[in-house]
Image (cartoon, rainbow, N blue to C red; front, side, top):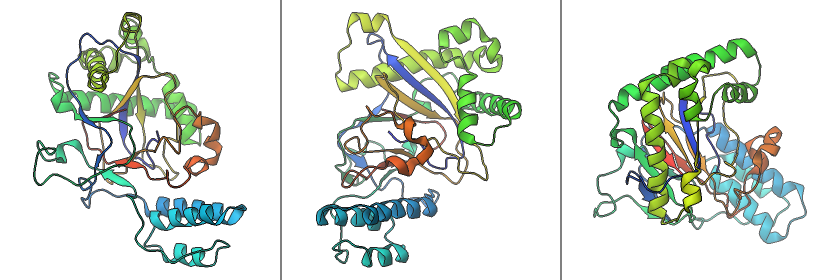
Length: 336
């Protein structure tokens, strides 16, 4: 999975290693083998043209740098043109490349498939005659829901508490570390947290504003239900040992406005059965969380080894370069 590009919002993210099957609540809307594609058509969703140009440049440079077969070379050029079709310089470079270039026609299959905020979806859209367009992409099941569906005592108050606590804690770490790189700062912010909710609530001194709050206590319980709901919907059995020895890992991440690129590079949650992200604050412009095709970016790979190359160091080979982009709003939850 790829995580957000140039995201400028604080988010509270959760990962689950082992989950309990006995207390599941059917929370999540499950999308498997298909994706909603017109729900993100709002003009409020801004996906960086600069990033699209960089991705196209990446595939053009790859086409120019190696001794590919004609088919492989054309596939790289087509990927570059597909990603940034409106960029005239991309087409000009493709025409003078060493590949056996053919003028582009309508490319088969979808490009980036965009999914809008959960509450923008039509009610009961799968049964509606006017349902959004559905296209096959890849067979990774994803769950979508909104905090308002979780029966929290005050879901808006919970989001506000998490956002304020995360921003304050992040600023403390930023002042203490004084590091230039956002990647380093983000890592230190993560390391400053107790990611075990039981330990955090038993000894909250590391972050009393969050760990001592009633909202956090309620959220630790709800987090398990989100994970178990997803597992049950997939029909995945859990052994008694797994159910009794589960591990829940939770943490906050903040992506602030900055003059440097602010992103969380490609990574996978090793050893996790289920992970999810809750967006507690999403200022405009909204940029997406991106899930890559696992056939081109296998989750068994440790992508953090390639962080020095940036996201483009591990972009997938065509035809598995087409990701799913989720344009979230405050309160949205994506489970994977």
